Amino acid sequence: MSNKIGKILRSVPGILCLLLLSSKALGFEPDFEDFSSGYQFELYHSWLEKGGFKIDFSAGFTSDKVVKTFQDTDGKEVIIEYYWQDWIIYDQREVLPFAFYVDESVNINPYLTYLESFIYRLNAAEKEYLFDFVDSKSIEIRYSDKSGIDALSQLWNDFSSKRVKVEPIEIFSENDKLGFKIRSQSAGELNILFPETSELITMLDKIKLKELEKSKPPSYYKPLEPVVKEEILPTLKDLSLSEYIKNYIQTPPIRELLHNKIGNVQEFLISEFPHHQIDNQEENYSLKIKPYDHNFYGDLSLRVEKNIDGINILSLNNFRFSEKEIIFENGEHIICSRLTEHEFEQITPFIPQLLYEHRALGSRLLNFLLIHDDIPTTLVVYSDERELYEIDSYADLLLLLNEYWHDRILYFSLKEVNKIDGCIEFKGFLIADTPEEESCDMAEILFQLDKDFKIDLIMMILHLENKS
Image (cartoon, rainbow, N blue to C red):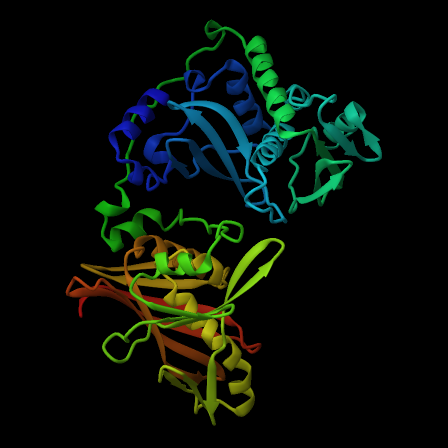
């Protein structure tokens, strides 16, 4: 892999490396020569073996790492990061969920790096990879009323034949040591206490030397059969929206967790919405832009919640209503005259969320506002020909469009609220506009609610490159 991928990535500008998202595109099936040692090469195959993973899953490439998303036997995503230097892999980690927020002045990265490598090795088929990674004189392990090597042995016995699926990890301190609590639904609590950062780094350096000593010589490894042919998918820049959907509908981008990554909310919103006027009062933010064609609105009203885990950005219910009409401060109004008073009261609180979720398309704000997951969706695309797609999750479709429309201004308005055969339906119109061009992408979206007033079916009819 390294020679082939290395040549390709060296020839592609850095910004485009992030767009190479298909494992089939670059054939990410690393051989012995792609690892810094035989030990790392065998660890890679040991991890695949225990999880029973197939390798034909999507991957993203940067100059520092490969990020690859697998699916376990339950269909759940498992994200692995392979860190490399000059296209040679020297470390492998399993991305973990963390349930804490630490001030940026605290250098916590070495600890998180260790934990992700630790779990990756616990999920390998051979125990040596886990035991080689623990120096009981430096790292304190507690598990199942045991400590040290006894705890590690018990941990391996519990997971020798199955993967550990980690719940959000918590942080604590004890006797001036930093500790982490790791829980799993299928086992007890694992506690790991660390020494100071310098001692941890020294320990990791010794582990790398140990790996080199245990590595077999290159002649031991038989070269794998060469890849017959590599099909390189075109990048986002080279595709029309119709082509992009056809190529990537089965592998949509994943949602990015930003709660711990946003330092200044005002700067974040300015960078994501350069065409909007942004005002804030305390923790509320108002993003305003002139309506498209006087009828389609792009304004957003947001509120920010700060907690120990970081921040969360939510929709702000900034409307009033008169009889059965929802009225926003910018003059936008939604008429719901066909509904009963009870139905109107039930749907009203959720309208702003629906509006702002769609107006956040094309920006990273969508990662905060996206909620409509696991809703069956029919997508009809009109370009030179009519294409029909059945999608399991509306959220996946929005993430796909979000990637393509990253430089657009989005407008979304609900124009009809009807009641058909006892079911409430919303009809919305979505505009993805590029100011300097004379055409835009436009979608008609029909939302159907169930008897509990929750959206249970969605149809989107997408018209490409309409004249403004």
